[in-house]
Image 1 (cartoon, rainbow, N blue to C red):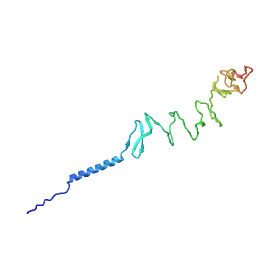
Image 2: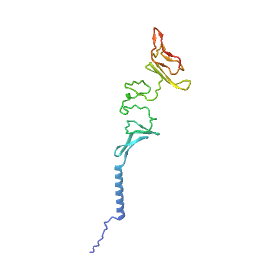
Image 3: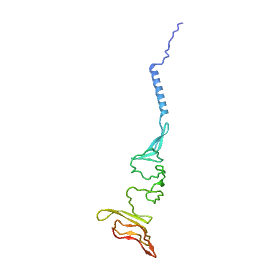
Image 4: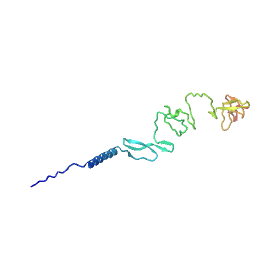
Length: 191
């Protein structure tokens, strides 16, 4: 009996092997990319922030046109600009000083320490209703001067010390008042 041996080729064809290798490499690349992918969601006009090493979420900052709005505190070592657009500031401390260390606009201020003013002081009104400074007054020859009115400031019934309209360079050092129902103010009526 004749036996015929048929030899079978067990080798995989080269093109099939190459396709398998490419598929495996692409599969690993997709898996690696999936592990490194950034996940998260955001809100329109909200600046994103990394909430973990692979996730992005919303920060405390939003952009509205040319403005960036911060809904939390702002910490910076320096800020620059002229401050002309800064509004509604309520600082807890400025330069290590509490707000009470600064004059407040639109309210009465009391200073407990000595104050020094280098330069001109313009004052409209009186100090404790006892001293009035009228500055930047000009008389006939174009010379500037001031009026100083001290003493009785008057009340709802009696007029206080005064300087007549148009008078420049007047000084009332004090005095004046009311006595027995009569007003006794000091008045300067000429330059």
